[in-house]
Length: 153
Length: 153
Image 1 (spheres, chains in turn purple, cyan):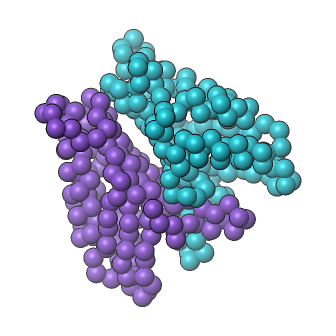
Image 2: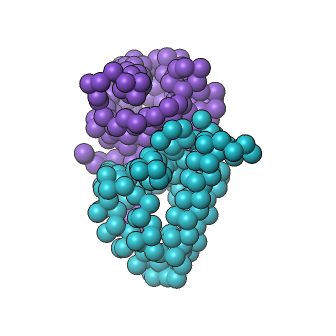
């Protein structure tokens, strides 16, 4: 089992490095608004708990949603992954991180938001694949029910 | 690797059954507002992405938060876990589910909300423990930024 970078050349440290590499590549695809590259990390039974309704998104739904979401950004998307923790063993793993999304929307609005991300992996035919993503912000418990899009880590 | 209940007596099916049993027990502790029982499932480095700010909660923070949150409910809390999926292998596992919270608050308000839950496990000294929970609702993308507490599965 592996929860941080190790200097020994164990199977676990190889797997952790491979998952970290995928998170990095996934981020590059997001910045470039490359939907096909982005969804190539997902299994066919991929399931997301995402920022936007409904409660649950399947793979097709995610592809359509990404297409529409990318169209709302002017130019590339600013994307930074902070506090990435990787835990994996055998054929199952997960990561946690705080992700920073920044940029200008086609509406002219500026986006600058930190979201929490939990990403779950399974090894399929020897390769790590993403089976589940959970991305969210909390909401204020002051009766406003307003999404807390202004929090900083 | 195990993603659903199996009838064979493999190590994976034993581990899946054990994780399902823990989710059931955790739910019983939540209904009973038993904070010590609830937090006995967590590791000392437990980390949560929860419904309420801030972005990240540690174990101590979670204990204090539960205490305050339990005090806002009149009588026991209604709690149902739906669509529970368990994935585990070796010493790492995770679950996804939609959880239904119902009941009356001390304010007189009635709560009836579905939340998305991703729970991540690690085997510590032979026993499954919860290292991470991510619980959220999405929010409306209509400019209101309102938390979607009225969605049904």
